[in-house]
Amino acid sequence: MGAEVVFLPTAEDSEQAKDSSRVLAQALSNYSDDDRVRMTIQGSSGSSNELVLPGDIMNLMLNVLTQVSQGNAISLVPIHQEVSTQQAAELLSISRPHLVKLLEQGAIPFRKVGSHRRVKLTDVMDYRKQVDEARGKALDELAELSQELGPYF
View 1 (spheres, one colour):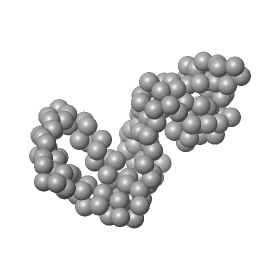
View 2 (tube, helix red, strand yellow):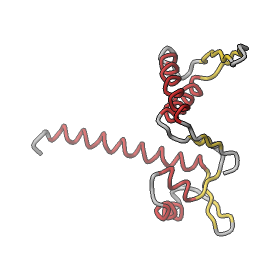
View 3 (tube, helix red, strand yellow):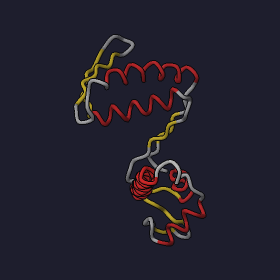
C-alpha cells in the first residue's frame, strides 16, 4: 500500500506501551481535543527536545499505545491512500463479495486499474461513518419505542 508503516510489537514493546499509555492517558485527562499539548522527549544520551502537538495527535498516540499494549500490530496508512477491495472489506468487517456489491451499487466510489478495483481510504471511512450513524439512530429509535410500549409489549 505504498507509504504504509507496519509495527509488530514484541512482548517488551507491549509492556512499555502499557506503562506509557497509562501516563499519557493521565496527562491527557487535563486537556481537551482542541488543546495543544507540550511534551518533552528525552533521549538516552540525556538530550531533550520539546514538542507541541495537537490534542487529536495525542489521542491518536494514546490509541496506538493501547493497541500495542495489547500486543496488536499497528499499521499507519495515509488517508489519501487507495486500498484494494480485500483491504476495504476488512476495514468494514464485511466480506469482499459484499463490498464489491456495494461498489457496483454506487454506495462507495471506486476506480478500476485494469481489472482491479481501487477504493480511496477516505471513501471507505466515510461509508463506515454513515453506517455507524445510521445504526446509532436506529438503536435510539428502538430504545424510544421500547420505552413508549413499556416492558410488556
